[in-house]
Image 1 (cartoon, rainbow, N blue to C red):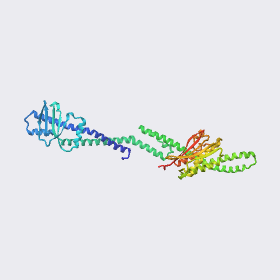
Image 2 (image 1 turned 90 degrees about the vertical axis):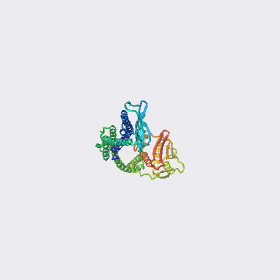
Image 3 (image 1 turned 180 degrees about the vertical axis):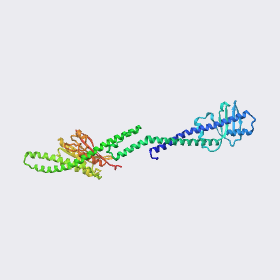
Image 4 (image 1 turned 120 degrees about the horizontal axis):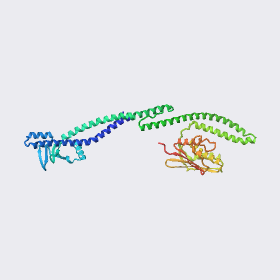
Length: 460
């Protein structure tokens, strides 16, 4: 109950209304005290007027008048003459004097609160103006115990009434909140739960009908999200089916092309000059087709294992990559170099890191060879407080705009002619598995720079 929105709203409303009533109670109790004292002055004035009308009142009657007014003494000032009209013996000396003629609200509130906190019975003097201008002033002496008792009784009645009003108001607001907010919110939650059970079912898309503007906006946002998600799920399903079909076709096509490649090797031994001239081109085409099928199958499996992280000496990995690439190029056309600090170590999977660096260096080498202009490829590394950095830079022709737009998109980001674009996509995926990132820093006529960031932290 209390954990629900309506339950908490009920409790908060009760608390807030009670606080409001308490703020009202403070001036109310001050007003009650002032009225109480003013009433005693009026009673004392009536008693004094009775005595002035007949100076021969018996002592018993004077005592009765004082008891009825609940005072000990009555002093009346008329015509600049101060006269003790009625008096009786006081149980103790006067403790304080209060003048109601110039009492400001803060003073009245302060005196009322002090009286509530003072349980001891004392005698006080109260001064006020007579009613109907029957003199200049009137003052009485009285006990504080009856005043405090009356104030406490009044306060208890006010608090009880406040509590009843608070509970009743909170209950009404509770019903209103349930009808206006809680019920529509539960409806939205129900729609979300039903949609989650079968997100492909378009019948479960919510239909906005809330009367509250904010809830209706939430329903419309949910409908838009559900519509977009259904479209994305359908596209994903179609792509999954297409991927399965492509994988099967690629598997069979690879076997066919491999067999054809064996026959092509025999054709190369032909004595016919035309055949000998065309055979290498046919072999290269077959090789590229087999590579495309193998890359498609590898990417379609999506079975890249999680990296086995260990401290790796980067210089050893880069040396293996550059030694392999030097076998495929002429030294005059492509210069391969490294700029790695001695014993530079970082945390990575050595096999996956080799594949990433090898892929980037190979792409740079192929782009330089295709341009026909000599250039240099440099692998460098450095570190900061949070990351290790590896840079693969070349002075080649730079990436074409189309390659930059779909750089890490499978089958779209191919850099070299005939490329599939899978190499960079797989390399980026491997680096993300390390918690890092593979990014293109810059490219242009002066060359291209790729950076690999590997974090030093443990990701917690």
